[in-house]
Image (cartoon, rainbow, N blue to C red; front, side):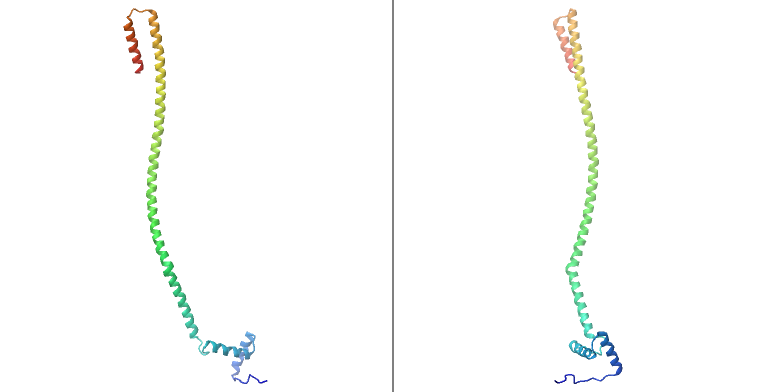
Length: 182
C-alpha cells in the first residue's frame, strides 16, 4: 500500500504552537485542521492575508441592500397608502365630530322644546279637567235650579194667583230659557 501523505510543510515553531492551540480547541488533530483550512480557503476563494474579507463585506452589503430594497418596496406598496388612507379617515372623523356636535346642540334645543310642550300639555290637561268639572257643576246647578223653579211654579199655581194662562205660560217659558242660557 502506498502512502498518500508524501508531502510535508515546514513552518516556524511559533506557528506550530498556534496550530497546536487551534487543534486542541477544535478537538481535531493538526493534520486534519490543516486539510480543513486548505479546503476552506480553496472553496471560498478567500485570501488568508485579507483580514477584512472583502468578499464577505460585499455579500453583507448586497444582503443589506436587498433587505433595504424590500423594506422600501413594502413601505411604498403598503405603508404609504395606509398612511394616506389614515389621514383621510382622520379628516373624515374630525368632520363627523363637528357634525355630531351640531346634531347634539340641535337635540338639546329639541329636548328643551319638548319639555316646554310637555309642560304645556300637562297644563292643558289640567285646564280641560277643570272645565269638565265646571261643566258638571253647572249641569248640577241647572238641574237643582230647574227643580226649584218647577217647585215654585207648582206651588204658585196651587195658591191660585189670578193671572191669565198665556201670561203664566210666557213667564214659565222665559224663565226656562234664561235657565238654559246659564
